[in-house]
Image (cartoon, rainbow, N blue to C red):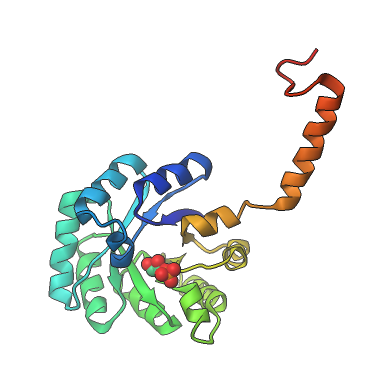
Length: 225
Ligand code: G3P
């Protein structure tokens, strides 16, 4: 499962890359707005930092022709490898088909239903991004939806992968990880939850204290006798 950061803050991205085995960065217009800086300035910094990592950038327009124009501008500014996030509306489907036919990498986003995912995959998207927590908040089941989309793609032998987005807790991520979902994009606070565990901290504190009783305060395997 690819592990992608859903964030556009370069300091947080640097910090996540320092500790976690990351595969790239996604963002959306809301995430970019939080930076309060020109979008391409922010995105170019991210592009340079993540080197070969995947960068997924979303268009803002509603109409297909404008989405396509935005896609070409994004690629011109950030490179041809950039994944263009297209909202999976009727106009979006048209844009996905045009872009995919031109060999442009598309991530179909704002996915709430299996039908949207099916249509986006058939139109040529390489990823579809179901919004796990937002689906949960509609009284449905985001994890189940993502799994059903994954199964549907396997049944049809589509090469499209699920890039699950919108997580609010570690259980949602782990369920999809166990299932073999292609990728998840996760905010830094939820990424931290995946490794934070007070029982681990307590166990390590006992190991350290016992070792210090044997060898002296601050001693490690580096400087003990
Ligand atoms: O890009 C879509 C995804 O990031 C939405 O996440 O946390 O705003 O529901 P969230």
